Length: 100
Image 1 (cartoon, rainbow, N blue to C red):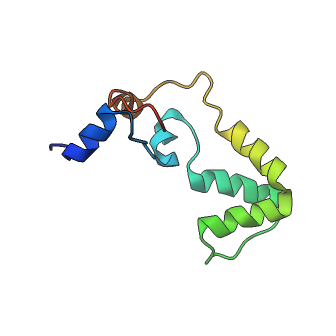
Image 2: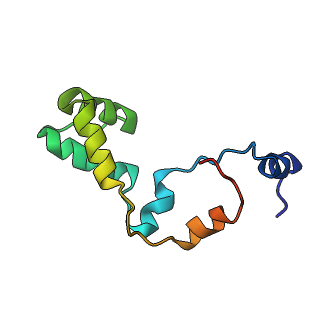
């Protein structure tokens, strides 16, 4: 599969930004977005409606726990110190994109 020429040019001129989701790092042992939110919801001691989307659940956690506690939790849960680089991470690093 060939990459579109405008994408190749953006990477070559350092004007590409790579946006990836939490799922990319699950293989390295980091939590998925669902796992991160589930652990925050548990801290509230409450349950949320099953029809809520993930953004509503995150906003609920901030309203109950406060932004500082939520941020501290996210930092703790996503600390990748000592985490091995996965094959997917290595493939992305090889693309040469500098901004993630």
